[in-house]
Image (cartoon, rainbow, N blue to C red; front, side, top):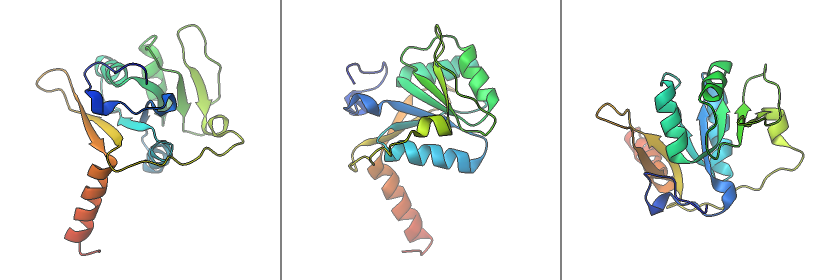
Amino acid sequence: RDRQPPGLDQRARRGPEDRGAEHAAARRRDDLDQAVGGALGLGAVVVPLYTTSGAEETRHVLTDSGARVVAAGDDDLIKKVLGLGPLPGLEAIVAIHPRASAQPAAEGVPRMLTMASASGDTVAPISEGKRDDLATLIYTSGTTGTSKGVMLTHGNILSNVADSLAALGLN
């Protein structure tokens, strides 16, 4: 990316333009797993959105992280994001529920994609990531002020998985 999102240090820089922050929120667990797994496999940085957050907090997270795509599991989140008005850098909302329909971008409104329209005919290559690549930004609850993005690398996540497997005796 050419610019550093406000509030994040240099480690948040991902490199190629197509690796901007990806946001995923869904009510059904399988939808969320598919969106997050696909985004990580493509080298995107995933930033979960709390479905219970208010408009101001949602706007802060999307703006501070430099969101380019929002994956929405239901119409409520789509309405919330669209109700925020124009968001700098937000290119698309991918509706990951069966009732959605694709729509082109309009003045100040990002394009709306469905899982089918976002998939395309060509399979995108899986990203050759590294352990120290940024995987996710998890925003704090903001109970003591403005929420802040906590950066976790793929290595952080793999370490947690390895420790969990060992604690459960599943090695």
